[in-house]
Length: 297
Image (cartoon, rainbow, N blue to C red; front, side):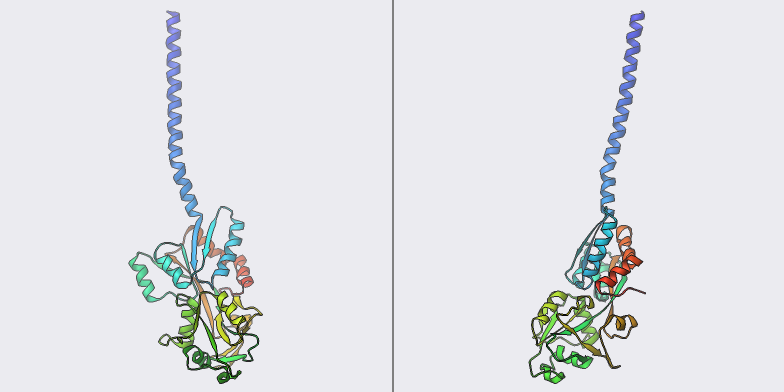
């Protein structure tokens, strides 16, 4: 009887151990099932895509590089393509942030609403759009009317604006560019078209290269792209000539100063919100200055 009692006791003990082991495995399995989803949610929260304006691009890239150095778990993908491309990507739900060097258009807002996207605007910096010529060009300044004439085709010779008797080579941006849209609205007027023989380029850098290599060329670029390879012109909107300098842009005296934008679907959260806050922070302000733009007051 004693032997039989011992066997029964051992059997019951084994059953209890097995039950506890099975419960533990089930608990671990449940945790294992939940962990990938939790990890995936964390990864999604720490990764954003930003796309759009080539004017905003250098600022976004510089800010993202510093932010990710401070937050190794974060991943911020930055790409250009133009303001129209960035806004379209936001409307399609392909990016978390659309970059634009112009305000979103009414038609774009309607398209966004049709897709269930609530576009929210964030001004992250200011730029001074700069009209540039080759350093060998003797022209140092132009009025709005003269710039308009050059770009709408009514002026085609540098001699008509105080330069040499040479044909003007007009460098333009492509129509998806926010810089193109801003320049058209500000200088030509929304109802006026660019001249047909203008050379279309895809980025600020392409404009810079074209003008630097052609003594008869004229173009326009974001202030951050201004180098000694081109000459920035003084501009007169009617109140006298104003040079494209950081002092004049910050003072509000330069007529081609404009805001630079991020657009999000609704108020941003997570990494998108943190990234925007970082650009507007004291550390972000230093990056804005370093890139060549100007902080939001």
